[in-house]
Length: 130
Image (cartoon, rainbow, N blue to C red; front, side, top):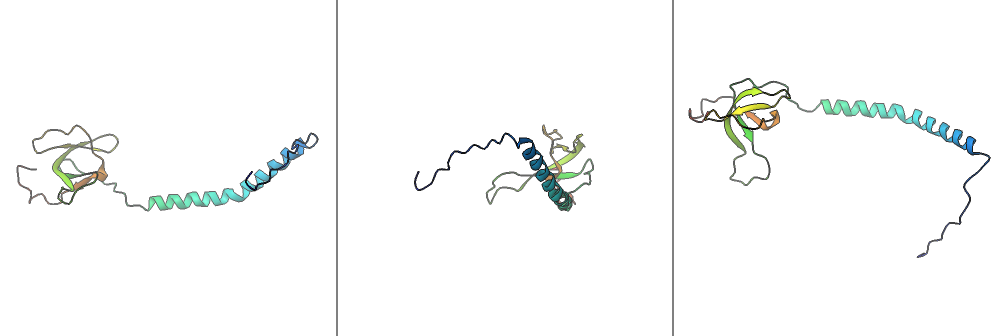
């Protein structure tokens, strides 16, 4: 069809050499495994080292700290990049933070560490906001 030649139908079953073909294929797989297994382990170690080199912050934010929440999604030029300020009132089992707003109302959702920005010096914030 369209310049291609169709392969002839051949009988691929070989009644007398089935067991030898299976043994031969098993040996091929074993050789392939022996050749690629060490390379795969080296690649796994390299990926683990590469992943552990990323910047991850493990320090805990103390309760009472003032933080801002990063605004997600597409933002226009005039939209604020961070919402807040909020106070940290606790931490969940999984490491997310419980926050309260300026009216001491607890936020319904917990927030992960990577979405928080810690305020180093909250002397510049007006007293009613923090």
